[in-house]
Length: 153
View 1 (tube, one colour):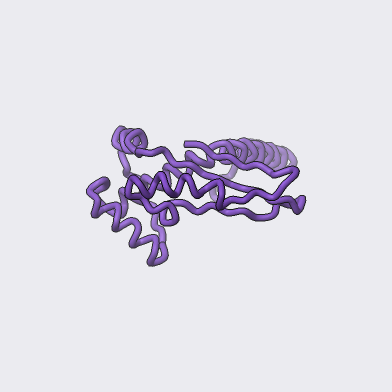
View 2 (cartoon, helix red, strand yellow):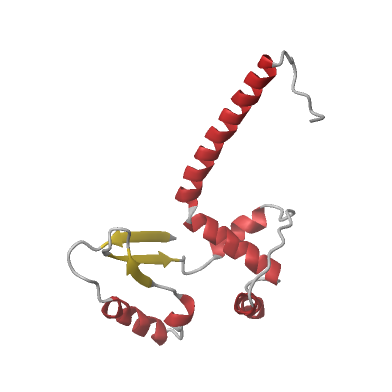
């Protein structure tokens, strides 16, 4: 799995010219590029064109094995649009997954893997917030002369 994002410094990028050979190669394998990939070319905050490409591993066997190695006993309710539901159903129809739930779990895992570095940064910041909150509570208890935190509040 890879994720790349670059700002183009000098010339506009012809995304079509870059993607056309890929489209042809995938079409030869019976894969419709436009249904599996969403590539965008937009403006970065500097006003320069920015291209973001996300590549998903050609097979999901490793993620499936990881999922199978641990219990899926946490329930997360999620509402999806009709197109997403149809996509999950299509994965079930292929036999690659047993249910919409398993398909959703797999793709949530994949999405989290794609964004792992950003999530690590956020988790570090959240740890700092928790540490500061604990210090604030400890100082407040000391200011009020409380020895232990009152759990009933």
